[in-house]
Image 1 (cartoon, rainbow, N blue to C red):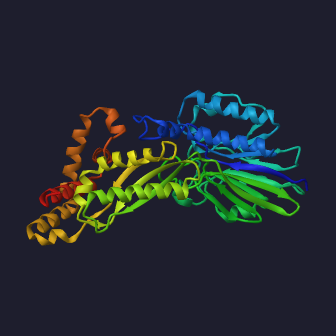
Image 2 (spheres, helix red, strand yellow):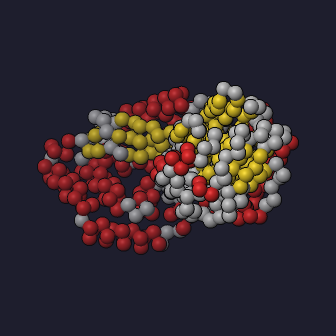
Image 3 (cartoon, rainbow, N blue to C red):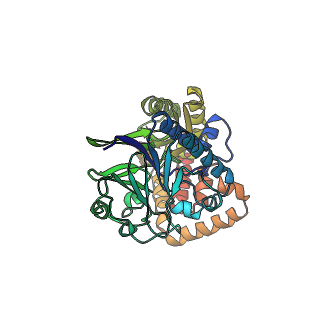
Length: 417
């Protein structure tokens, strides 16, 4: 068998809009806004530098109803670079691509081979003899198992199946094109290039069943390295290598405030936690962090009331490390009240009374109704991009969290915080 290598990637989500960045300026927000493009450019750089035989894109190239044709022009430019290097591309459209106008409007270069949606199709890569089978989505919500529509493997060839699937709702993702691992293995292909699940997973070897994950984390639920899978095929079988290309790396950073009674000590721990996370995990990339302050502390009420101020402090700390090293997305106060309220029985009674408020369905419904009326009077841009956690909770109709914020504030004031 002729030895060759190819890139398997998926879930590019070019120009995916990122909530919360619209009103923010500076190097880090600009880099985050362009991160999906830059990660894809790096992937194309690697394909050319490594002289891979071809690139497989297993769906969700675009991001839903996003209509800017400049997104499509960017993709075509990158495909043109691969075309000049003699690299073919095999593409299936996923659920987000089926929603996209760009998918239907722009003509792609001749080196890009798109699988149809009515039936599974097959392309043969002439230089290597590899056979690639795939099927695109016709609509965003494909609910049938597409695997039975895929053709039998071609004898004496390396067969690749390309499929965008939830694989039984894996990882909490919507179960589009539902199938099982057994369905894929039974097809007897050599390699299944999957997409849709935004986490790198090798689910089976011989035959290989692989999710490469997305190439760039887009929010705090997509932490850690992101990239593609480089697959090498030769006489010794198949070898895979996960290659990161993310330019922004997301991280959830915990700050333990248990037992602290000095706000300055909390700031010191925040600064140390940010620096440690960057040194440990960034690997030269911008680290986008969410700080969560935890632990039982007498500062609970003070921290809750100062959450926005803590965010500003944390962002200043990040800038102090260098604007290309760290950026703080949010500070979340998840502390609890220490037992100090027990020293004053009346304050403890008030705390207990307010703690039970969230269990009163009539009170919760009244609060939601009043908050909805208030939000209706605010400018739309404020509710789309709330500047404080209190506004965010109000927008999300999180009545329990709103009541907890108010409880913490009341107790803090009573304690002189």
